[in-house]
Image (tube, rainbow, N blue to C red; front, top):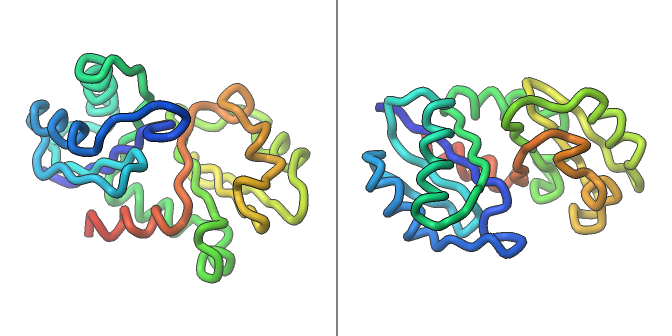
Length: 176
């Protein structure tokens, strides 16, 4: 058994609401060990011996069965999470303004042309880079004011879910 980080896309935002206690109960019913959540933001950490792709499918099916929701889940190992942290192309920005750096974990890769499309949308010093199948964003004026964020949809980027650098580090602490 090792830790698995489970990131839900759009959980507890945009009208998709599942109480964190319900997420933990669902994980326990699935036989996953030591389920814990980070705030109410679609982050679940469990212990499992299962492969990440298999666990993604099982979690998505359980979410639909338990809550009637089709929610994309992205599962990562602690090693993959450490690689995500190490690959951050904006380390100075993350150190000084962690809420303005976003790592977008992709379900099935980054769509061709996504990085350039985001760069074309960028305004006010915004930047985007891709590394290891993750999109990293620097939003100097905040994500809510971002020209990229307002237009970057799964159709443009691929299916993914973003976490600001504060959350990235808190999740890392949960699995170490």
